[in-house]
Length: 363
Image 1 (tube, rainbow, N blue to C red):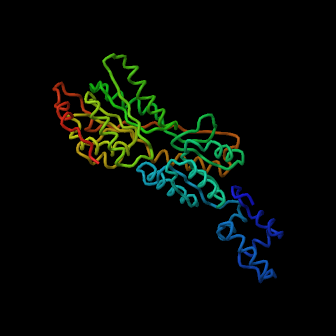
Image 2: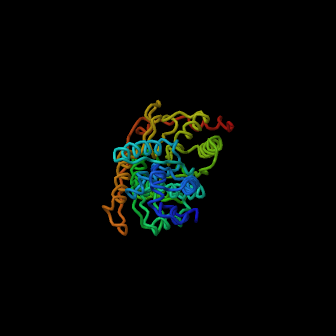
Image 3: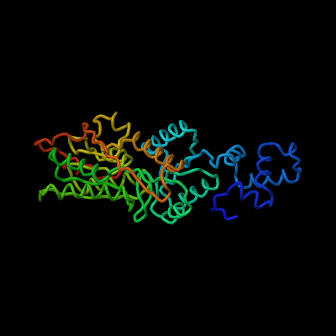
């Protein structure tokens, strides 16, 4: 059999040239009662094991056509945002009688494809997927096979799908406007190298807020680090960027993990927040709330995103939506103003002097 094809009970029966009823009797422990030979029973069990079937879920699938399982594929289950998304989706799925299999792609296309196929072979009823940049073909294959799925956090260009995403553009635009309104005019934008929709929209929102301000005294600098760069490599890159641009009076971090790493890099530069430099971050984090000073953010409504995505997927699975009909929801982020980005003081800071003394990059 093709390893990428979703294996059904019918496939098991066909491969062994027996009836689906015979397969059902073996799975449910009724071989002897129904006069099924030991040889046939062993063949069924061996093939089920080879194909990765769970006998209980296989029996349920025979009765209902559903495995009552959902595959959740995210970028990084250890990330604050995705970890909390997974937790809420699991709770909501359990309320509806579903279990959730989840795993991380680490933003790797091959890993994402492998996970989709493994879950397909485990007969999940549907997927919630944070897409990586290069899995367009795999998503189109799911569409062609009418397998229920919902994309979250990001879209794939030129592919119509069911989705729940954040309005990344408006969140970034509003967060940048907050900095401008508070008097910051030399703003650094630190992001990752990515063509995914949510990152391009965040950068676009930042750039357009500066353009719309119509102030020729505004300046910006951009740094993009590699997603796969190590923690220390990212710190070093941010340190170099800050030290090479001592005129910066604020920094916009495009993700929460960059914000956390960035704070560490600023400490190594001996810069104080916000007296030497203000910062804001897209995405919240428990750390941002607890730090002194606390960090201003564009927060993603995690409960709303998670609940909307699982509810949409269940509607698709239960055929409350036509397979050919695609729908989606765009959720607005919330700007939470904290202490890292106050009104800019007219008093000049000693940041330039501090920067000139903090020239070494700490490994």
